[in-house]
Image (cartoon, rainbow, N blue to C red; front, top):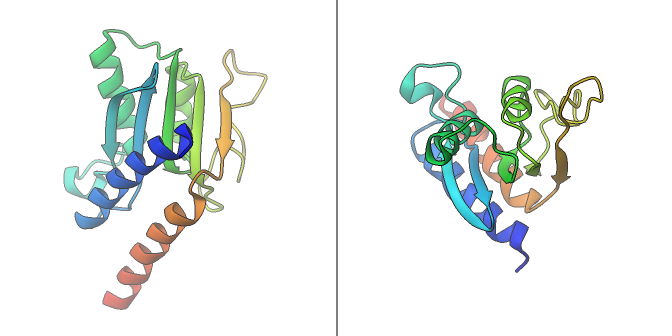
Length: 152
């Protein structure tokens, strides 16, 4: 198993935790020097807070652990393409690379609707890799939204 898949499987574990809490199933892992330093999943419904996205929680935890806001040697693994808010936080924290499971045609800001991470007008750009365990990540989202529709 390649390293990207290993870490994406951990992000999928986080997404499943969100799913079980009736949260949109998105998981995020931050890795530095091949070691997981932060892991998180969406908690917007639980926290009643619009910014409780997996990526933001993971970034905050990684910054706290490292004692600084620069995550320059870190890679973020996330099951679904980050939204504009999360892409902004990725840029602000100087994350080196983002590995994405599935793209998000409705809210994605890393290539689907726009690409904030590679805009040369910003003072930082982030490497992007997409499609890692894409089917697993996509199916989890489809299953979640299908279950919501069935309840209504």
